[in-house]
Image (cartoon, rainbow, N blue to C red; front, top):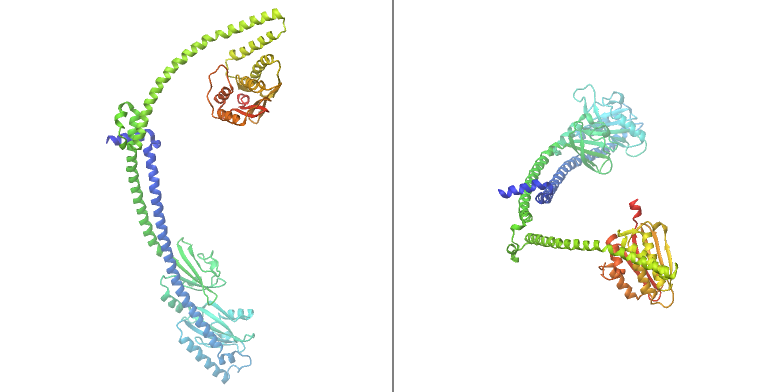
Length: 611
């Protein structure tokens, strides 16, 4: 119980920064995401399988319907061709045949009646057959009384005949209702096949009309329609010839809300659509390979949603159980990982209670976390020793500061002594003499070097210091070298480390010009370049070998420490530049044996930053 209280205190103190909370959340993500993804993947897999099963069942049922309707249409087409090929029908349709009322006319009509009645009786779906002769203006029928065209009871097919004759076509389908005073057939739905006569020739003289009873056709379809689909049969123009719902017959599918966004083409179609009440319907469309008809199936999705709902509930409970298990596993695993971390925190809070020599003496039982704890304790003892050493060195620093304060008296004594010597030289040798000039330059040089408290000084001050030094050297070496100053005015107010140029000039004189036979030249350049300034000290002395230059630049780049000596050398300048401005700054030497040496260094611009 105390362990859980301690854990709660740490979590409460660090909140989401707590390692326990972080580990718990990471494990949660690592466990929950894969399990949830797996659950979603399984759901979608079975959903797609169920969807394919529904699609296959719907298409199979529609395919059986298509096969049946195609068979009916083929038989209807064959029947109309057989009747149109009958010699009596051909003679009946010709111009100049026996006149109406003659014996030959009635004899031929009786033969045609027998043929029509036999075809009607032997079919389960044909209601009636008409033979129309335009030249005789007469209609023979197997179902209705034959009569003159204007007196015939059913003339709904005549408009289709006129359309065929106008467009010089030979066959069409027409969905229509039969309406007359006979209540027995009033409102009956037909699918009429209208074929022109004769079969051969361009002169149309009549037609054979085969009327398929829509109710009988529905009875046939119900035997193969296992899913109770709403079946529609449409032509290539989108007009509906047949439907389980009479109100949809003779409408175009663009006028039917469920199908208005569907385009009929050569490809079959399967998809979902919504009716006016928002109920989803499965839509399947198959185009007949035998005729230009489209068979459309509409099945409410509600019939299959029970399976989908069951699958969804099972997967939801599975995901919930997996998430709960993931939470428990993540919690206990995080607790186990956090326990040694809690021990490390105790060591950090109270390191004095741990005996490092006894606690971690056995390396065989030393794991990673114990190694961390051992290292922390060792570092604590090291820090304590460092604090003691730091205190001792602070005492030494205070002593050095005291000595430095006392030594500030010495420069004043030196300046006064030099001034006394200078006046004595001037009184003995006159106002203008080399000794006086040299003493004056040395006095000014010492004053700039020793009395300037700041480590970083303006460039113009550093140049003044370098000039005093060069004046002394020119007197000493009797003008053996020529000086060239090429320092841009825009760098004079920038900052530079004190006593930077003088050691470089000393190096150029002693190691470059002095060993050379004859006079030499020293050029000091300073200029801006982008966001920095560059200084160069160039001499035309004896130069250096390539391996010496390489070794020297390696030492400069590796930031070798300051050498304690009687003078500040080139290494010391490099070290001070890096200490003040950073490791990216410092000296670089370029030299050729017999041609001279260039010492170059880069400094940051400071004036703009101060402004």
